[in-house]
Image 1 (tube, rainbow, N blue to C red):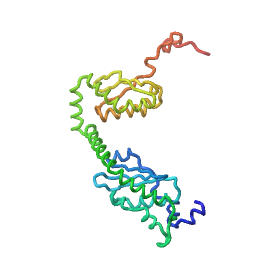
Image 2: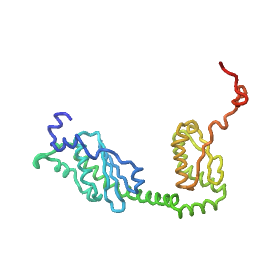
Image 3: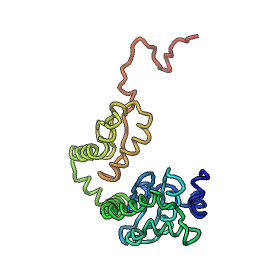
Length: 273
């Protein structure tokens, strides 16, 4: 911080700005796995993340990130600390002005210059939290219900028995149609966005799905790793828990060049040396 800036800030602001406790981020996947709502709002160069229990509207975890310098850092860090285990209504009742007052070294001396834009921007951010939470809460409840259904159908004996009965009642054609429907709904768009695609070759042994990668996926290094895991995980969770996805060997259909020597152990190619 420059001397010109620090001379207008309280000692509390400067100390928090040097070592904030709540800097960081919270990702949507973390909230989904825990059945919680994630509110992430941005104003100017400040972004705040709140992880909230949708059953009681209580804030369980907070983080923030900013490039905005010491004022935003001190305001956001103090706000994140104050709203831990508070309800959304209680958190949004806090004002940027009250945070500024809390950061003063002396009650009569401002901690932050009166004309600092960060005060108004912080207040706008707090209002955004209040505005967006109802929507985020609704989404979290839907995701939680979906995750609970997946867990029941894939991890409990009763759920697996129901899934087995439903799967066994389908013909092979119906099973492939169900798989194709989910690939089209949840998987294919992601692959096509990267220039790839996937084609069903066959379903064998009732649960072994043979696929062929197309486009960019055919030569992608993650086709046998991350992409395969993603496809199989989506199908296990949403179609049938016992599905196994087997990509086609990319060399299986490569035409044989008769001009090249064979690799038969009993008839090895002539030495090149």
